[in-house]
Length: 138
Image (cartoon, rainbow, N blue to C red; front, side, top):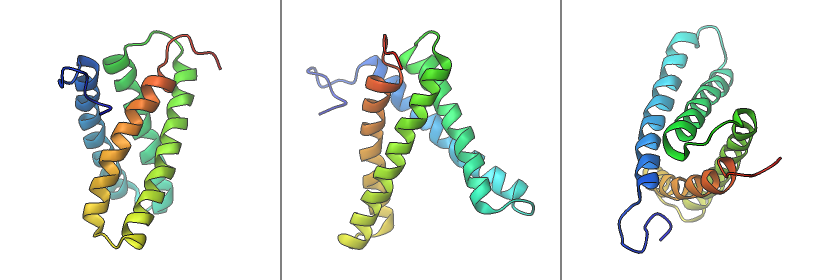
């Protein structure tokens, strides 16, 4: 299993990742709802969604960089790579939801739960091996 070491106990980085992910999820949800209620009379929902995602991705990047992976420097390069990881995850999420809901006829609440579990693992791999990989040049 990806998140479990040989001792069947999560290591410190994985625990920090799950904690940061919980915070990031709450932050992203709160940001989206707050922006909607604050700006929906002035901006289209798509614009609000884009703004919300920019803030949420930025928060996720900062918490993962400082709290989880603890890398030094390379802020812009790592931020760009983080956005690339999130773009890939968004694509995977959409395809998985489509397959699970339309293809396998699962209820949306179950399909979304499956997608979240899958994307958490993919996100950890993407960030640890690409976004915050040390000694990686662009």
